[in-house]
Amino acid sequence: MTAALLDTAAAHSASALLDIRELTLDLPNGTRLLHGITLSVAPGETVGLVGESGSGKSLTARTVLGLTPERAEIGGSVSVDGRSPLAPASLRAIRRADAAMVFQDPRAGINPMRTIGDHLTEALRLNEGWSRGRARARAAELLADVRLPSPAEHLDQHPHELSGGMLQRVMIAGALTTAPRLLVCDEPTTALDVTTQAEIVQVLRELCAERGMGMLFITHDLNLAGSLCDRLVVMKDGAVVEEGPALDVLRAPQAEYTRRLVAATPRLSGSDSAVGSASGPGSAMVEVAGVSKTYRVRGRGEVRAVADATLEIPVGGALAVVGESGSGKSTLARMIVGLEQANAGTIRIGGRDIAGHATGREARVARAKSVQMVFQDPYLSLDPRIPAGQAVGDVLRLHAGLDKAAAADRALELLTAVGLGEEHALARPKTLSGGQRQRVAIARALAIEPDLLVMDEATSALDVSVQAQVLDMVADIRRRQGLTLLFISHDLAVVRRVCEQTLVMRRGEIVERGATTEILTNPQHEYTRLLLDSVPVPA
View 1: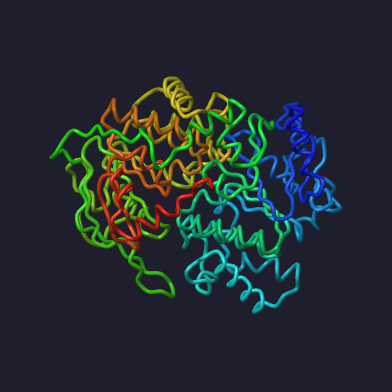
View 2: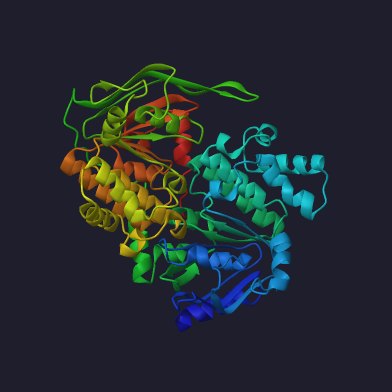
């Protein structure tokens, strides 16, 4: 760190709840991942930790809970309310009472075989000695605090019964169970739509104010960081490159790296709106007419996920679908891809009716080659046993008929295009960050150059610079090949940049549709106005 950064950090560490000084971390092979990190968080203060994937943000934050790589050599000091998580004798006490962490991937943090109630009550029953009834009552209160619609019912559900955004709220509720003094949040709003994000951020603000709780908040959303955080710490390649009051850093960044991050941040206004490459009227790639889908949910009967949806995407066009978690966006996308079967209506891709499931291997392979989907959760969409390069190469061998060597070369080209290198091609998913895993999934989907690409929150886990790179790549493919895009996102600024047309869904129904720029500047439906009002803006 520079002398100026050290002086600033020292000024804040005098009465710090979290005090990290000159933290280094070396792997057994001698590779240094953290280079003298110094930062602090005072009681009631929110400090944002920002930077690209692989910059060391999560690794720094994990040292607070003692979650460091096995056999890693750690230098410097970390103190949480006067106790060091680097000392085994105090680590359990810190985890029980002083600090808690909300992880980036909610599905990886909850046992899929146990209910939400089991997850939330375990610590209270085992560590605090609470009765089952008292613990469940407290768990229901926490779920209500994070704005889940039916707290009592959710306690008896399993993780697979909740959407990604709902499950992330469960994770936040779980972290608050023992009322920690310090909350470490690693991309906690990545899976949340803008209205839910606004509610969660307000909950976190209130908790910090009421409890004097400090918060270390990792995010790649600079707009969110500016609206929530008191100070920002910018990291690159395992080192701090800039630190200061949040608005000062965003409005007048001093480091060249910070200036690049700010420039890459999407905004609701600007001159970089999407430009269509459609073939013109009458050349529809996707035609959906009167499609509906209902599910039978235990204890709730039939739940309507999509009701009478009708839409059309021209060849080379890009349509965004926006709305809150549970609005039916992903269900609609999965029916278009063929992963779900509609209860009513018709779906045509390239003039072919695909409302029913394809039968036979050749039919399934043909559909996969025509339509590819990038899912919201990259960890679940990649085989944990297969290295990233092989995951992309296998697709090329199956659909493009390339031999093993040619497929490997092309796979590396695709991984490079989404910001990864040869070392990532050899890595398995568990060794990659969430953003890196999502880039592998995007490269794999684009490998066979499909006619229709469905992206379900596919850029939500990416930092702003890589997100801009991926979106530019998708736009280039659209221009060159006439790729048709169905883009599901809760980030309205990204939608403005990617899609010419937008439709808004709420509770399974399409409530507004039209040109993206018109919807974002002159929304007609009250719900659309609510979505726009919920977008974080640095104040």
